[in-house]
Amino acid sequence: MKKNINIALLPLYTITEHWFSISLSRFADALTNDLIARAETANSVTVQSDCFTALHSLQKSTSEAIPLFISTLAKNFQTSRIGQTLQGELDGFTFAKRNKKDTLNLIATKDWEENLSFDTAIEKIIKQNHEAFAHLETRIFALLKNHGEHIEKSPLGAENILSAFRDSMEPFDFSPDIRIHVYKFFEQFISAHIAELLEKLNTELIKQGILPEIRTDYAIKKQKNKSQTSAQSILNKPDIDQPESYQPTP
Image (cartoon, rainbow, N blue to C red; front, side, top):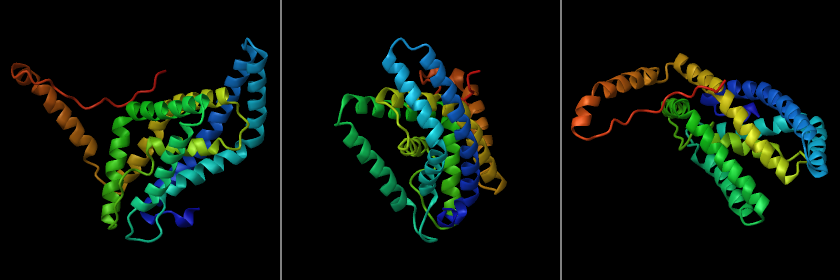
């Protein structure tokens, strides 16, 4: 898989692959404990049965699902040759996912609920880590521009992460209700931990000399905006500040 990774993005992919290999194993352990607790407190035989089936499937298929997640996510880091834009690669992958979502939306209520959970998770992850995602995307744009390439969106956006997770769930025997529960659980897990990965990736690009001034510029603009609050109040122009960095809830 690594031989197809865009050479400029290879260091970022290596960090991402390592981080998710460890984090998804931890997620599987946390999900196992959650499903055990869910089964113990279930008020119906159906819910208990769904939980026990899911637990058995987790034990059996996690080792298959993690490489599937990583290989799916890796497609966003690929190009066929130096100088080619990443637009074609990404569009084919992303649009396929969107078409898949559009199709699923027409099938049944549970599929609609699953897609809603999917889209809600994307929105929450982006909102809670807006600044780090924005900085990473900007630096990746600059990195590829230095190599004569162009990209329309970050290869490691929230939508790509959730799409890879969705694909990785294929080996599991989860009921529709369990699938929705797992999406929500994954969203909580990623929201609490993804800031660590984004910091690692931004730090790697800073070490390469890619736009190390973003964070400094942000701080200066923020301070300047605050210093102009009085003048803006007089002019009835509200002070629109940048979103704060996400701090995981203890």
